[in-house]
Each structure stands twice: as C-alpha cells, then as structure tokens.
Image (cartoon, rainbow, N blue to C red; front, side):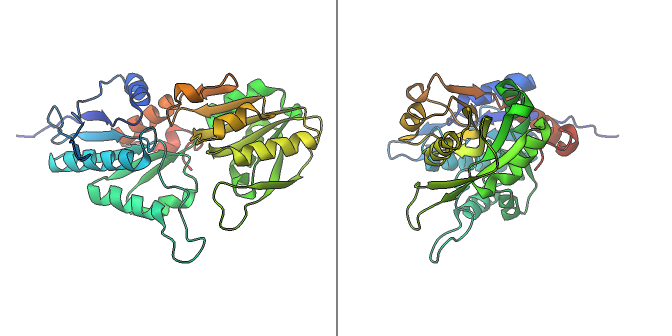
Length: 325
C-alpha cells in the first residue's frame, strides 16, 4: 500500500510586527496559527502552539524590531525551538529585518561579529532555512550553513522612483560607496544617471557621519538617495543637504528598513528631503509618521518567496532573478 502524504504550510507570527504578518497571511490565503506567546513575571517568554505542527512546513515570521531587538530575536528563537520539538518537518525563519546586521565584521580589535552570532542562534534553535530582505551586506548569507533566500525590495522601490520623474531628470545617489551596487542596479532599471556621496565617519563615534563631496553630476536633477536602512538619518540628511548645495532641484530618500531611531524623525522633518519612501519591514509608530514619509508593503514579495519555498521552486526564477541577491 502506497502512503501519500499531503504537504501542509503553517504560518506563525511573533509580536514584533503582527500587521505585516497578517498582510503576508492574507496574500498567501492562509490563517496565522496560534502561538500563545506569553511573558512570565520575571520577563521570560513562553510559546505553545495551539495545533499540531507535526510533519508541517512551518514559517515563523518575526522582524527584529518593533519590540526591543533582543526581545524580538529571543521570541523567534523560542518559537523555532517549540516547532522543532513538536516535530515540524521543516522550519523557515522569516526575518524581514535581520537584527545586528551592521555588526558583520570586526572593524577594530576585541569586537564581536554579532550578525554571525545571530545566524548561529537561529541555526541551533532549529531553523532549516532563512528568508530576509535587503541584508545590510549580502555576505551575511555566508554566516549560515543552511539555505538563505535574500530578497530585495528593489522592484517595490522602482515603482516609486517612476513617480519621481522622467528618467532623464533623475539621478540615483548612493549615500556612500558601499551602496553603489544597489544604486547602480536601480539606475540601470530606470535608465537614470548614477552618483554617490563620499562620506567620512569619525573613528570611534557611532551614528555620526560627515558628507564631504558628491561624485557625479546632480545639478538641475531630481536626486533619489537609496540606502538599505534609515536609522538616525544622519547619513541621509547630510547627503541630501550636500546634493542641494550641488544644485539638485529636489531630493527624495528611499530605504527598505525604516529603523528611525531618535532623532531621525526630527532630522527628516527639518531636512531638505522632499519625500521619504520606505517599506514596512519594520512597524512605523504613530509618533514617527510624517507627511513626507510613504510606506510601501513588502508583504506580496515575502508571500511569493514563502510560496516558492513551500512548493520547492526556485526563488530566483520566481522573481526573474531580481529578488534573489
């Protein structure tokens, strides 16, 4: 007698960004499962799934923000461990924003490589696969011995760029040399010019940058500053002011991850930046919402990747090579 087993997709969410998880679930046409997450009086967290996950393809969504990053990460690790111990067939950690991604190397002696530590923790907890969006550096994929689907929000941001003006009038600008690859890809898609801002980061001082000069012609152009994230907004605001000083007619800022640590909102509000376009990989609290900030949904992108993983199809082929970095 031949035994036929039916594949089962089960989707779960942590508490970091439930709105995004609901959007992903709606795009997939499935219901979010019950995690029954709760916190004990001493701050320890507990998870107990409300239904059997035995033999299921389990996807656990948790962006590493919204909650304090350590709480978000620990919550996801606990959910992964619970699924592993409940005999899930395969566990995929969906991390739209990957915490500690900027600590990906030793810039000086006696420092940790925390992005590698996070990879190790996800693996030890029981994750068989990881899905993330616009990692700070693509090399983070090498910290895993498991498959990593590294998506990019470029197609979503591309649509917003097309609203900014005619390609002949646009310049895609990287706020530093490290972001040139992504900026070049976007510029090539649009048929727009490319430039970058040379910046100096004072040694030993976190979240402080000095924009020094622009490489490329930006005079009488609409400039779109492209970065993977906006944290304190120091880099993006300084770069925007420099572009205006160089004769740019208008400056937009675009980023996948709106971290927006204080005083980012105030800086953006008072800056020369006309419009800020971000995605919802991280929640945007009411107090940080500005008229000039537009939030685009990453949910359809993540949902398509989950579908491809579940059906054992190539993620890069599903996205035509654009969302697999």
